[in-house]
Image (cartoon, rainbow, N blue to C red; front, side, top):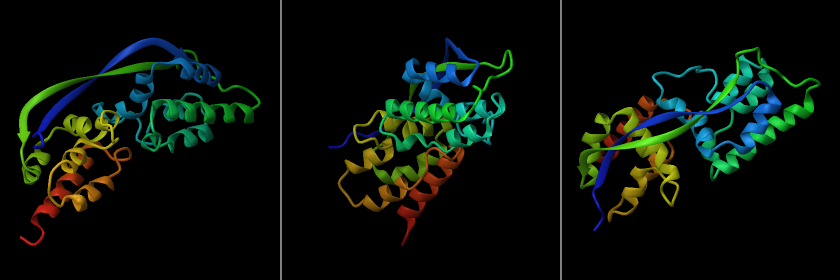
Length: 218
């Protein structure tokens, strides 16, 4: 028998590392050794902040390159990185370093930020809370998903991908273990982009998908 779906919430705690960079070469060097939680935070952590710091760029590295190094070409290259395309943080780290090294080979002078405009590396730590809500059958998703907080959506739809063996979100992981015909539902959920959508938009898309699935033909 499959365990009930335990709805959890979370908070992403920001931890200063003391690491910083003022130019592109220093950024590359810090990236080579920084804690994996830093890279996770600077890509995914922005989604749990009160609002996007800069909607023009999806990750902090691209934003700093564009606004502080004034290197728009590098910023564009970094901005199109989609972290879900990489199997783990180490592979994502290598991609970041490769892009930066390529840019260093192209420029005559190493791009520098003005004094005080450092790139500060911040590490993330997730704290998880049990809401006490349990789903015993998939149909209950219709009622529960619209009520989930955006941080709960983050935990189950985004952070789950580094926790589950399959690399899937918690919704698909749970549905895959239940007897029944839920392949179409999990297929629709799999099409949702977890990175280039705000958490509230992710919740709205999930809500519509489960509603449509369980009410079609009713």
